[in-house]
Image 1 (tube, one colour):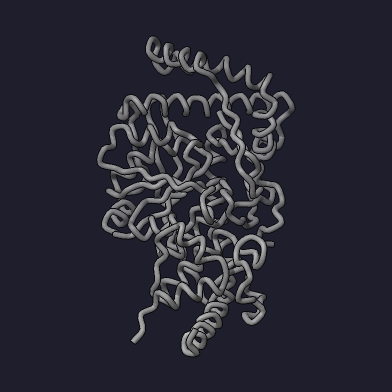
Image 2 (spheres, each protein chain N blue to C red; image 1 turned 135 degrees about the vertical axis):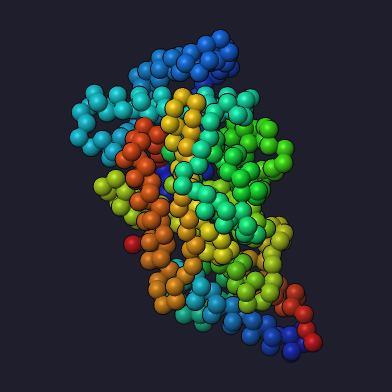
Length: 95
Length: 312
């Protein structure tokens, strides 16, 4: 993995954590840095639920211009901060 | 007649199916020979049977009856339960009729011209917030046509085949999509997408699905109602329109869709409080409807039970 890619992924993860904490009603007491990259987002782990998924979809649309259309794809993408970040990285056009 | 598990328990809904082929045949025969009055007469007797022998159904409805008719005696409460069963049965019979004769009932919309005009010209979707009151299925068919929008219903596919059947018959121009709330992430991503595509997404405001709830006062006690509809509408930038349908005469229904809200977060204000406010507005309307039409409320699940994850 190139250094550039890893640097970019780190930045995406950081931004994602901040956005999740500021947008999800039940995470507002959490410090973004306390969220682990590989922590399971839904159910056990961070404990997010289906309504939090709505907020994540909106975050992806508004801040990254991405739309998750395939439900099967969504299951893998929404697994953790890491999988979300990789999805964003892979689907964001670069100059 | 169905009974569902408590609103705020995050587990699969158990539906006990009542009635059998012979019973349905009897109702259909009476409908053919004597019309609605004949079927309604048999229903009175059948509901007496349920009051005496179906403890589960009676128990489920007593929660509501005890709140709505707090001063009623033991005997009066059972009378109220019977009237509730009869009214729910009548609505099932009406839906059966509509499935075969879509224009059998007269249908009116109360105070809704402006609302419908605005929505008709909007490309955005709409959350149609239904409740376990009245016969919302009757209104849904007509409303979708008036709005010239496709309809999407949030329900378990096998939950109520009559609804889907009723909506499809005579409505070739409409396509009715079903979103399963037991699907991945409760189907919320599909709901959001449907709204963004301009669908009317019809969901129950008083059923938890698997959504979190907020506590609001309802019929004199604290109750838990889900805020998912408002959260999804806010995320999609779509309005929420509560629907209350009331049967005014044997062959007439009136749908009230005169309220419309545009949930949008206010910066600096807690989201939790905003959910509570939005849900509270809806519950106020629900309560007002129930005050006027107590026997048209079929809220047979325990909304008054404490929920550990509800917003304190």
